Length: 304
Image (cartoon, rainbow, N blue to C red; front, top):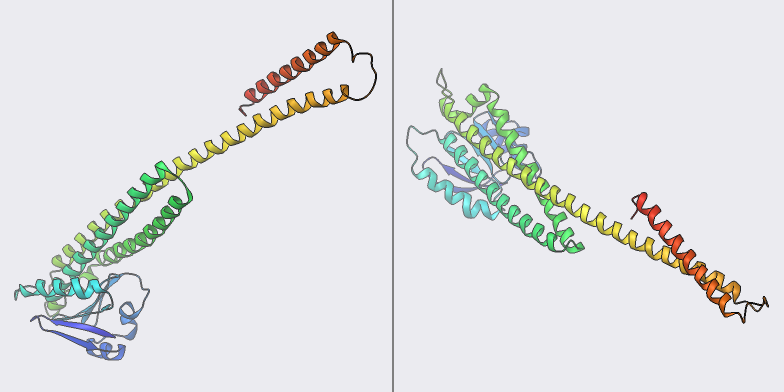
């Protein structure tokens, strides 16, 4: 795998090394390098042999006490942002500074900054889509919201993985001590700096995770409101159909009776104008009474 090596003196070189070479050079087992070579590997930070393996998703590092190998060079953010920033950070490295912790500190800060940038982009996108949905909850805007939810879900997984990676190390003092490669010869290793770096990292990632939860809650609240609006619209349509059906039934009733009296059967009422108006009046009154009764029944049942 292609990687860039930066030494404590600031010298940079490009290396093409396989797992066997790396394992032998840093006294690691092959499986310890899996986080650096695997395409889909959860975020992790641990020390093995003479190195610290750090996979923060975007940032993949193999750190020793005097050099660091940077992987994932296919990503322009690594080559255009992370590498120049790390070299600038190492320029002011003093002798009393621990190289591996300085690199780890920069990597965690860069990862947090990258996650904040992604979160701001998601927040802007969600704000825009929710505003559009308040105006028009058509299919296009709903599809936009669905795509955003998928992005948020994927981002949330990455945030949780980084949080858990930091917390896992913080919970074990032995692992914190192992991160301090420069102090391994000392009897009493001071791991305060390593603890401070990871503690700050976890706190900031927790804040991002909290904002993601708020973002999801806003989306859920909007979806509930949209669901209520759609249900209300559906109920209105159902009520309209019911009223239309009732009206049709009333006219159909009168049409049936009219049809009966319109048959070519002599009943001695054809020439009686009073009988005509009496029958028409009875039809209208019966239809109105039936309509009022049906309307009241539907109101009592809270259908209308």
